[in-house]
Amino acid sequence: MRGKITLTSVAALAPGETLHDFELQGFMVRRWDNSTVYSVRGHLGGQRLTISIGRAGTFTPHTARKEATRILGLLAAGKDPRLPSDKVLSFAQATDAFLAHIGARRSAGTLREYTGHLHDHLLPRFGRKPLVGVTTGDLAKLHLDLRARPVLANRVLSTTSSLYGWADKQGIVPDLFNPARRVERYHEESNERFLSMEELKRLGGALRELEKSGQWSPFALGAIRLLLFTGCRRNEIRLLRWVDVDWSRALINLGRAKTGKRVVYLNAGAVAVLRKLQALPDDGNPYIIRGVKDTEPYKNLQDVWEVVRQRADLRDVRVHDLRHSVASFAGADGASLPLIGAVLGHKSVAATKRYLHLTGDPARAVADRVGALITLGLDPD
Image (cartoon, rainbow, N blue to C red):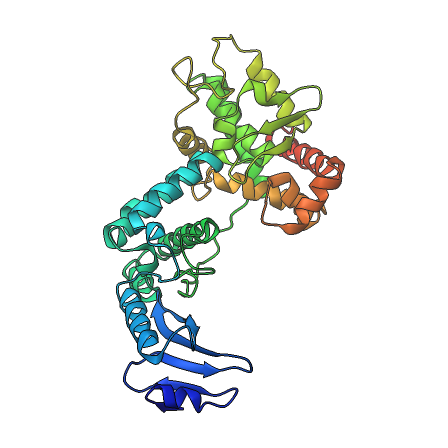
């Protein structure tokens, strides 16, 4: 019910009744079984909040109204009254701390992606605003402005959601406060491309021709083969070091993979590629896929891939599609989704964790069979 909150009207409330003040919108008082509590309702970041002021007796209608006015003023300024003032960060301040957190715990590629989204699209708009002052409407407008690039628009929202998820855990925004969560994402067309056995044979022929020509780095060409045999991501192979290889157990330890530390089982084809690269003259470079300088990895695998895919007439195939192909060959060989996830390091597949925790043998078996299939396609002779 509505009316003016006074000592008389508060005293007249029955248990379960709530009185909404008609003078100050959002100010209200409710009678519970054993107490009467003043509170105020407002909006922050596109979310409706109800904030308790205190009990009748501790507060009079006059002092409760003054506190309600103060709280509504903070909400209008984009500040959260429930947080200590020293925790009210600007979006830019939170971004700096968030990127430091990502840099210490995630891969360099993830850090570059988040940094780009934040610096190119988010900070120019929201940098000076309080972190809790960014609304769902603000982000919906940004998302709409990026509609010509729907995948980028969705990724920018995902980065924003990760930022607020981190802030929630740090206690610098209210519990579950995340204005990016309710913005509807654009539909993304699936871009899954994988090699057929015939295409794999053409790829093998192109690699052999380029290897014989000597015009391209044997390390770059070896990287293409390793990507196929292991199903690893591009930078997981490009940044692989000799110390990461466990020859006795035929595996590699990826310490800074995109999804964290993981083990990759080496099938016979992958081991053969590594042995061939190991036999090349040693210049002391710690990276398996050596670059021009003695201490650096190969800079850009895309340049050699452009030549390889043109030679093999695979012009629509991306480097990442080699990873899709490993999943395709594993599926064709009868591997279950959890096992494919174990081979590829898909941390988001919940069942994968169980297989990896219990034993590595099923994942190794899949890796070995896929390696045999790929060897048959790449080097049929």
